[in-house]
Amino acid sequence: MKKPGLNPQNTFFLIMTAGLLLRLLFLIATPAWQSPDEYAHYWVSEQIATTGRLPLSKPDDLSYEAYQPPLHYIIAAGLLLFPHEPMAFSVIPQKPTGLLLALRMISLACGVGVIFLSYRLFKNLSWLSSDETLLCTAFIAFLPTFVGVTSSLNNDSLTILLATLSLFFFFRDGLHDREAWFSGLAAGLALLTKLNKEAK
Image (tube, rainbow, N blue to C red; front, side, top):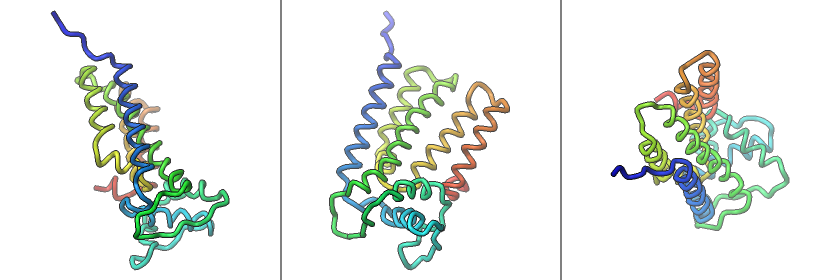
């Protein structure tokens, strides 16, 4: 007797829910500035919000991330336009402020979006069974490095989301003009977020 497979909708809902909760836990529990380059990413957005201009990059101070394309920083700067107290860097682990948590939520939203789009992408691949589609989605959702990246302040999360969106349109029901246009647009926006991610 053939064993019943996983219920795709219920299993996908569990993967999405667990992935979201896991990222929320990391987002809240990780002390301020203890993720790689987190303060430098914040600094660039703070400068854009304060001056209305893109800062210059200098390797010997906090502007060392300012050489990167600006899309993520402009989005984060939108949150920093609201009245707030600028955050200071500290090597001593401290509880993240509400402002830092809000900025980290950008990455969390991108991470959840990647999980959702990955599932839709895998469903479009005819050589994957339903169970294999769920397994691949779960692998992405719970990959430790990806959990860390999508629960901290950085520009990687948005880059990965846009790259995944580009692939989703590329493999969606054949590459027609509309899908090709959206795939190219998403890839272009990814290049405006983190150029070296796409250049490798």
